[in-house]
Amino acid sequence: MKRFDWKMMQGKTAAVLMMAVLAAVGIFAPSTLAAQANPASIHGHVQNAAAQSVTKGDVKLTTDRSSEEKSRKYAYTFPIDASGNYTGTGIAPGDYVAIVFVDGKSLDFIDSLPLAGGDNKTADFDMTRKAYTDKMTPEEKKALEDFKKANSEAVAANSKIANLNTLLQQARADNKAGNYDASIKAMQQATAAKPDEAILWITLGDAQLGGADTDAKAAKSAGKSPSDPAILAKYTDAAASYKKSIDLNAASKKPNPETAATAYNQMGTAYGKMGDAKNASDAYDNAAKTLPSNAGMYFFNEAATMYNAGKMDEAAAAADKAIEADPKRPDAYYIKGQALIPKATIDPKTQKIVAPPGCVEAYQAYLELAPTGSHAEDVKGILAGIGEQIKSTYKATPTKKK
Image (cartoon, rainbow, N blue to C red):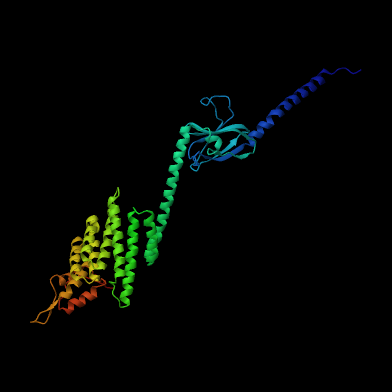
């Protein structure tokens, strides 16, 4: 009979105990390690009851369903971005409550959000759902309906403005390209949709003025009178559109002097081409008063318009106003000289041409300011033709000797 070996038994017992310990560890450790090595992720979009993205706040996760809100602990917090989206990673598997918080106040929740290891789950919060809106108080429901109505009106207004901007840009492009009929049609549509916008009326006036100029040029080329009633009617329409813009701008909360001055300037051009010197001069004067910094340009435009219309006295008077406002504008002196030279006479004793007062001085001033200007050779020829010596303080830059 063999003897019982206590040492061997003790060794086996130790081994069994060790295996039991390892088995126990094996029950718990692998799942813990798996959770750490294979976490879950979530992502989603948050929108409020008005179907607008919630652009600030957080989405929080908790498994604490028994505590009150003030004392509840949250395992994870994920920020909501400016587009209403959020993303959460590194989440241990479990069954969570997901809650939306904005400014410390909970707005919505998902009661059960089970996440297994490796999940990348979408969890959207849509507060437009009936289950959510049914729980709103009567006051909250009324506020929501009021907001939806106001927002709908704002969307419609923005759509209208976008359409008007498109029409305006297209009309300006058509004006630049000489497609005046298309521009007139677009701006008539725009002014009908928003008749209180001054800029739209200016652009309409520009299209009407361009169309009238085109017709007048065609009539002249065909040997017909540019003063045809149909052409004058287009100039009249243009002047009326500019007047509408001026009145609307003046009645606005913040009148824009540049808008008014532009309309007055263009109105002056329309009246001038109609042959209405008085109204043209008044319009240019108003442009200069409205925006004094551009007075020299407005008065020069008046002088050029009157000169092109064959109204020499008015052109000379406007040139004087332009020169007073901006003495450094050479073309104003040229127009003054050109407007005065037709009044030159011949001295019966000497048979020499005598220029009217101020004419020679205007030509000389032009040469001083623009000795190589586009009209310089013409002016020199005129002065030589009437026997006047060219006087100029202009000195050419000396050529460097090689």
